[in-house]
Each structure stands twice: as C-alpha cells, then as structure tokens.
Length: 511
Ligand SMILES: *Cc1c(COP(=O)(O)O)cnc(C)c1O
Image (cartoon, rainbow, N blue to C red; front, side, top):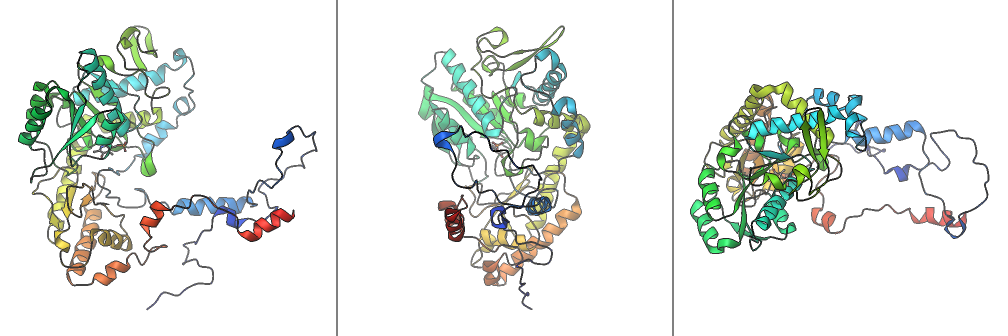
C-alpha cells in the first residue's frame, strides 16, 4: 500500500515546517507597542532605506514554529543513541536542578572572589574528585572540551621540554586509530605527527612504537595513546608503553575521553601517564548533543603540574583565592591562560552533582555496566555481524563490513535503514582502521529490553541484506520526513543564507 500524499504536505501530526521567513505576514506582530514618535534623524549616511526584513508573526505562530522545530531534535531523552565514541548517556535531572540553583546560575565571573567562595569550593571539590579518581598530581580545570584538554596537555609538555632545554623535541607519535582531534591538536601546537598502525589485535604494537621512538630519537616530544582506544579495546601494554616513552625522554599523553569505561577501576597515575584530559560531558554526564557545552579538565603528573595554565583556585586557611596571572605564586611557571574566566562552570556543577550522587561505588558500577552492555551487544550481534576484533570489548563494540560482502549493501545503507527501524544509527566509518566500521556504544543507561529491541532490528537488517534485498536498503530511509540527502553537495555547496523570493524583492523596491 502506498502512503497517501496530503494537500498540506504534513504527515499525520508531523509538520512540514517552513522557514520562519517564509511564514511572514507583513505587519503581524506578537506585541502591541505604541507607535514610535518621529525623532530627529541623526544617523546621516547610515540610515536604513529598506525594511529590516523580519517576518511578521503573532505570538502563537512564533511559539508553534519553535516548538515544532524543537520536536524535530533527536536526543537521548527520546530514544537509544548508540553513537560510538560520543557516550550519549542519560543526564540525570538532578544535575540540571543543581546547575539552575540561583547561587550557581546567576553568579557572574567578574564578581569578587570573596563573594563567590561557594563556586570556588565547587571547582576545588570537583578537582579533588578528579584527582582521587586518577591518582594524578594536579588538574587544570579550564579547558572547555576534550580537544581543548588535549591542547592544554600538549602545551604543558611543550613548556616542560622548553624548561628542560629540550626544545628540539618536535615530533608527536599518534596511533592511526586515534580520534581525529589527537593529530589535529599536535599540529595546532606546531608539532609534526608520526603515526603508527594498529596491530591485528586493534591495539598499539609495542615493537613498532619502540622502533618509531628509536627512529626519531631525541626529537620525540610525546606519544598520545587513547585508552580504552577507539576500537573499544583496553591497551593492555600501557605500562610498557609508558616505560618506553619515558626512556626516550618523551612524555606519555593519554586521551581519556573514554574514561567512562574504566572510572573507579584503575588509577591512571599507575599507568605512568603524564597528562590526560577527561571529557566531563561524556563520563560525568552533561547534555552534549550538537557540539556542546562540555569541559575537558586535564590531569597532570608531578613533572607537568608546574606548567598548568591559570586560573588556579587556591585553598588557603581563610577560604579560596584565585591565581589569575602566570608568573606569580603557585602559577610561577604556568604556561598562561587558555580560556576566559574559570572554565565551563555549569558543566562542573553537573559533573560534581553526578559524582556525588553516584558515589565511588556508583561510578564503579557505571563503568562496569557500560562494559557489560557493550559486550552483550557484541555477543548477540555476532550472530549475523562480523566483529572487527576478538572480544571482549570495553564500553563500545566495533563491527566491520565483512558480513555485507557480496550483498550490495553498505554500512551507510544499514545506518539509513536503522532510521526506519526507529534507531539513531551508531557511528559509521570510524575508526578509520576498520573497513566499513559500525562503532556501537550503548552506555550504562540502557536496559536489557532496550538493547534487545536494537538487537532484533540489527539482526533482521543483516538477514535482509544477506537475502539479496539491496534495493530496499538503497531506498532507505523511507519513513523519515526526509529521504536520503546528497551529502556531498550539502558539504560542498551548503546554502547557509535565506534570500527573499524575487516577488518580495520587487515589492520591497516599490515601497
Ligand atoms: C570525544 C573524543 C575526543 C574529543 O572531545 P571533544 O569534547 O569533542 O573535543 C577526543 N578523543 C576521543 C577518543 C573522543 O572520544
């Protein structure tokens, strides 16, 4: 049965929403203001001669427009969101309630520190938890995201080498499986990036790393390793890696974006790590769809701690003070400032609220449940899909596209067909080292029921593909308001500006 078309273009109660400019009723307004008295014209040359071009709308029309747009958002609050590497977990409402307490929400960064002692205590307590959980010496709280935290860590490494007369160290070694931010950060800091391949196991090959270190000798500044890595695997040889890196006179940077898989289970300091960012918005919950907000505090070893950026919250007998300037007091060797004010304060509130409500035992359970859920998916999906690496995995599982071989169906087709099934697709084609990758991260917040529904859909899609029903996949998604987009054109020739239709322009010219 074909689906009926409608005169309105709407589908049931799903609305085909025009741009706000296309809903213009000239003269309509949501407010009733007295006419503006004619004042003396003082703008001279810059006086506007054409209408501002704002759409005329009544209040209910404005409200409906934005409400309908908001309902088009897909979020973790509406359903399963297995986007590997992004850690889309439930954000407890308690955190939001805490972040909205007037004492936190209405505070101003220019307030004298003496009037913001509670906020300083919150930053210090949050820092304390991060140090307890990692065993590291210091933490720079101000980086605004994971990538910014990487930048902070590499800047500290840069400053430390400079201070030690080792300014010739210009190379950073990064595995090929790394998140794109790792090489990008190294390049931004002025380093040359040398990559090393993953072994068949999906992990760093220590022999290859040793050879790379030997090849570049005293020009290596640091090695950046993600653990658990982007293949969802634990780097078992971290301590050997750290020893080899230190023996070469370099620093060991660990990308800790996936800390949610190990929090409460191991001390980062015990792995020989010198610097690691923590994505508060992944491990410690904060709504972060659409690119923010986030926070990427960077924990540092004793060797790097002196170079941490300002501002630094300092606890003294009477309360808290803030060292704002590099070159003074505790910030004597600080590399400078990376961010305005104190960092993403609202995210600190949410993270601390999450940590305190979960408690040490709760955090440990969360990492365990995240790993259990991913392994459950890996085990069940292996009935039809092909895991890229032998298990067990950590918080995410990765499949390659061998199960689609000869079917004419691609990983992208599977992702599109999942939309019809009512699931946000997982991350696809990343990590790059896995052919046609499907990277699935269920997080600890999903129930077995939710995982089983996803498994049912995935297995049925895999079977359909193997039955030779490629045409159905190529047509997917069929049930969404929009079908498949020309993604290349959208990326290459985006239309970012609305221009009025010619008839409107003619009318404006006549006015
Ligand atoms: C998310 C992520 C990053 C980057 O974090 P942002 O907060 O998005 O800048 C870096 N590395 C890994 C492994 C990640 O998953």
